[in-house]
Length: 127
Image 1 (cartoon, helix red, strand yellow):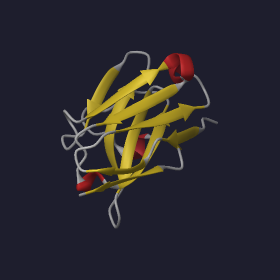
Image 2 (cartoon, helix red, strand yellow):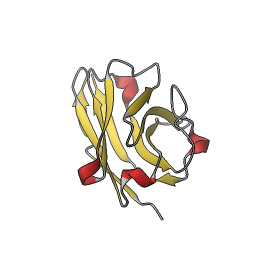
Image 3 (cartoon, helix red, strand yellow):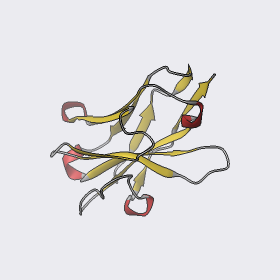
Image 4 (cartoon, one colour):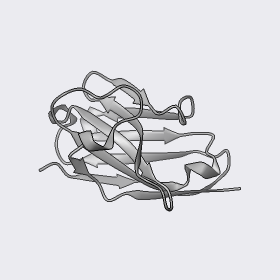
């Protein structure tokens, strides 16, 4: 059973930055894709970014391209989401998720492809 724990959320002003961490209980090599998703108040959970672990290929939703960067640290079994130029609409609970087998889909990660989920970390962007 793969377990994921998110950290790094918090409150920040518009234009600020945060780095989220997702620590994975197993080597990332055992999971093909690790993605970040977010769910704002009253909204569905949507994909933000994903990384094809080991290969390092990354995928992003259009809404965060150029502002968010996903990366992996295989030595520490951790995947990061660096978020810059934050906007109020980035306010959400952020979740990391992992899948085994197959490939990461292009563009925003698709929720139904991921089997393992963390509990989430809250990000609040205020003006």
